[in-house]
Length: 313
Image (cartoon, rainbow, N blue to C red; front, top):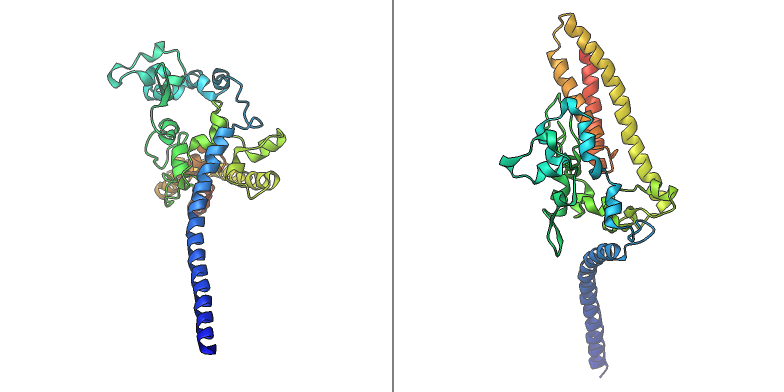
């Protein structure tokens, strides 16, 4: 009897332990699935709640849009006529954008900046995006052409976010892009058509919340504001420092040219430094669009600058 009792007790204990293992295994699997579900739910809830302390949703879209840079895209372009080409109107003028490729209007007569119809196919019942959100924004917010050493880079927000294009740097997509976020999560909180992203530091000054808390809820606004401000300051200072040094190197380079000194190798290195620095500065986010990539670009470019200085001695 004692033996049978011991066997029975062993079977009961084994069954409990085995069931516990299965339950833990199942719980582990469900936890992973739950996390993914919760993350998606949080994003949807965030958009649906339309928190008033970030954007007043009762302001009509027309009034919101009136404060965006899109409404001034054409006047802004016309102020820089010294380097404007017809291709520039594709992203600065609604009339030019909407016209078929073989029927583009005379640029002298265009009047409209970017309008709703540039991003949306509009019908009586709905406004649908022409492309998916990322393509809608980056179809214009990109470097517009291949990035070549020696040439300035023009608003490379797409390239920075996706982490490609800089000379000598491996592809490094931003973590936000890899997690599935696009431009609109940060630049259109609550679907606001001001398109003005707000840093945590700005939010604190305005006594509001930044969009960043959607993903960075593990930190306080104060902590995260300090962290982001520090990152931006680091990128800005590195850019400013390198820009000043490069200006002095340009003077040396031009002087050597005028003296008949061969500067072919130095010119090649200068071109890389100039273009990579232009890449980071033209993005204008001071690292927010892709801090890791910005840091890699500047670190590599500072190394190339030192090489340039050695060549110019």
